[in-house]
Image (cartoon, rainbow, N blue to C red):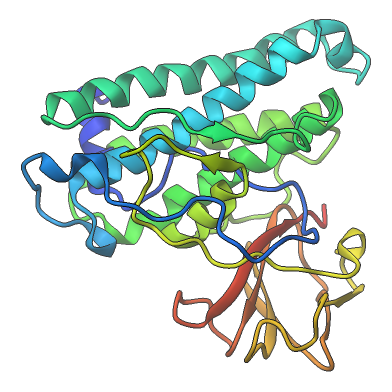
Amino acid sequence: MPSVRSIVSGLMALAPLAAAAPAGIVARQATTSSAAPAATSSAAAAPAAPAAGGGLTDVDILQFALTAEHLESTFYQQGFAKFPMSDFQALGLTDGQIKSLMGVGQTEATHVTTLQAAIAGAGAKPVEPCMYNFDAALKDAKTMVATARVLEAVGVSAYLGAAPLVNSSDVLTAAATIVTVEARHQAFIRVASGAEPVPAAFDTPLGPRAVFTLAAQFIQSCPQGSNLNIQAFPSIALQNPEQAAVGSNLKLADAANPAGAQFCAFVAPGGNQFSQITDGNCVVPQNLSGEVYMMITKSKAVTDSEVLAGPSVIQPS
């Protein structure tokens, strides 16, 4: 088992993967403004480490991970402060499942303190918690569990998306010890919410900018020096987000927006699928399962240069 030091080293070499970057629950109508404006990192005065994937330094990556961990830790803290145990019991969760769910939140809090120490040890000031809006995500205990389910799924996708950037076998080993725990978190929450624990034979990689886009939905503002120099994609605005299911027809809120939109892309286990946009409409394809990331693209590709909006998260199963 790698030491805490080796795991932190792994985090430093991984592009923005944020152990479990949070996400919206399902595709929904949304604004096109970024929730977290880009700004110069508070680590600017620290000695620069070699640039990692995406042009970010090691300290930048640690700051990104800490930003996500602050968000996750706060989400669980607020949720468990708001809802009594009886609310989770009313959902059918056993006392053991509730204890395990609380343990997930405690893990995120441990990640925060570990990353703070690593960043301070590198001579930089750790980013501070931002102001968050979890009103929709914490409407009730049921919604909290549903949000946690997606949050953990995005964490797995973030690690997988960063894996190609890693050259060191030690770093890969350290990252693997983390992502397997994140996957167990997600499988547990799927069971607790009544879903199949293993919905597909594969998990889905997701790039750093897409991960940040999902996290930015919850960020209202950050303290001076605690913003990240990462630009979120615009959100997807749909007329009928409640119909985001296999075989359904989705309608863009504005057929002309985003300009140049050609495809609805569905980034899913086993490969990406693309549905042509016609008069602002696209059909959700068959054979989707688990958590699926929907994007609006200008070609049959989901590279950053081709994405116009999204991702949003849909859950076919």
